[in-house]
Amino acid sequence: MNRRNLIKGAGLGLATGLFSMASKTEEAIASEYAKATKGLPRLKITNVKAILTAPQRIRLCVVKVETSEPGLYGLGCATFNQRPLPVAVAVDKYLNPFAKGRDADNIEDMWQNAYTSSYWRNGPVLNNALSGLDQALWDIKGKRANMPVYQLLGGKCRFAADCYTHCSGRDLKQLESSVRRAMKENFRHIRIQLGGYGSPHLSEKPHFKDAEFGLSSDSHMDPGPYVRATIKMFEHIRSACGEEVELLHDIHERIPPIQAINLVKELEKYHPFFIEDPFAPEDNGYFKLLRQQTSTPIAMGELFNNPHEWVGLVSERLIDFIRVHISQIGGLTVARKLAALCEWFNVRSAWHGPGDVSPVGHAANAHLDLAIPNFGIQESVRFSDKTKEVFPGYPTMKDGYMYVNEAPGLGVDIDENLAAKFPLPEHPGYWSPVRRSDGTAVRP
Image (cartoon, rainbow, N blue to C red; front, side, top):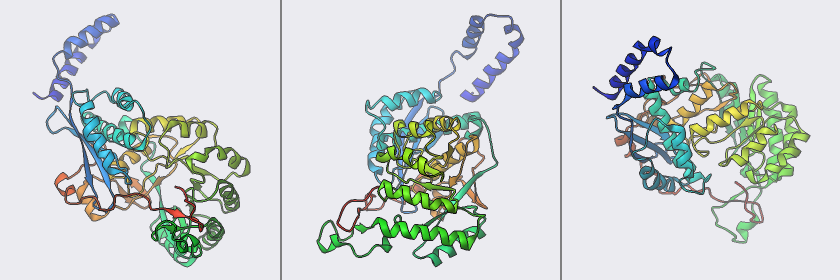
């Protein structure tokens, strides 16, 4: 008899004695339960490993947690596209020996102790490794309960997660065409960008290249051309595509804080759904000044790793959308607590969900989206055919909404043999430098 049947039998035995227990003391009831469950095997973690794969040429890291019940395992996302190899080492060499033999049922206990097991914490490498373990344990919990994870979080608050899509173009004509295509696909929320982050193609020839400062491959971006073009971009798209579509934009910390404040003020008249990441995390102190100047909704948090970065912004009502990358902050356990914190301050969710989140991670995003009352919006994703083959059960998109697989757990599996056929690209994944005309480095 496997452990599920043993537990089921124990549960029936306890239910049979329910009425007789009603008149007993709490100590007697606890004693009865201990006797009924004595000898049942605990579900132990037997192995934790990192799986690296890149079916879309994006460096994905998925953690597989195996258990003492044959065939029962869980998957979690630990994707840190810019540093995948250190995450894999942290999983295989540190979290695996730490987690082996521990109870797979006790997710909160596991998270708290794994979080402090390195003594120093809140770094992106260890947070991602911890996220992989954490999400995998939630996946196991759902499989054992025979429920999707969103049911364990309280059940659905909505039928699916409303999403925004990305539209860009090197000029206004290209961008308008992209927006109109997205609207035909029934997207109601669209992020608009004129070229890459900061519209680097609009800047004039950089002087640092003439001076042979840095490398010839380094990019160039100056704030002035970007700011002026962004205002014109909103004016054009709002005029051409109407008031019904919700427009979003990502500053991506590319300009000095005071220029970001002026830009957000100028964009207020175009009624953006939100403006994302006006400041770098190091410049969080500017949010008070920004709030005093404009009522434009603000989304922030893509680069956050540490609670100290978001608690003040939320509790002082300085942002409107929390935008963290769930694996960067340590997984589903901490993200659901963050969502609860945000609920009391009327801050909505907008979890980071680009291509460098695995289908497992997108599923975790969506399960949380379904279960929290203060859901705001979710970033949409388009999986390649190869990614779909590697990750059966991936979340699906229809008419601008993201749907989860209703299978128990997170609903996503991985074909490890197929995943091995897509090794990581030779390029290690770091962000190449972006510079001002004189060579000054530009964040992020």
